[in-house]
Figure 1 (cartoon, rainbow, N blue to C red):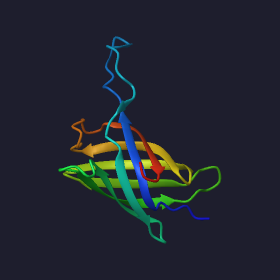
Figure 2: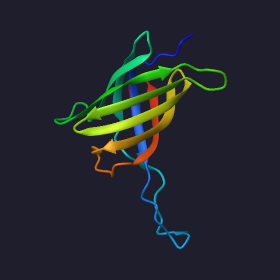
Figure 3: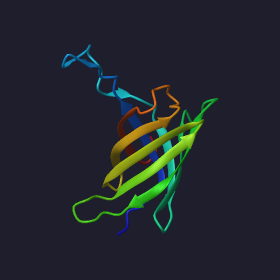
Figure 4: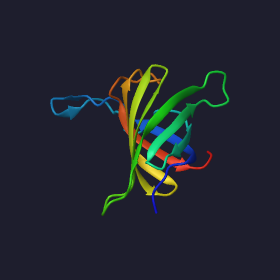
Length: 137
């Protein structure tokens, strides 16, 4: 059966503090897992040719929600490799690359990296884990 990414998913990403190493020692006590974004609504469809189209909305129901347009593709499982998604998200002059693997039909884990103008104010190049869970949050 082909893996598809459809419907409403809950999106959450994380980041870490900057890690500064001086004289082979980590300076300070950087936090290694911090929430990057609030929980987002990832509304998505996958076409028959495995192209993904979605919106990722943070602050839904607020006066100023942030909406990213998301596009990319699904790669089907092959041999020992699980099905995967590779997408980009753009909006509000921001740009993100998101790659994730399907753990099962209701869970995707992977990474996200900001390549321009992070909506949360983090520097370009900030990256961290991302989790998507099927269904409403």
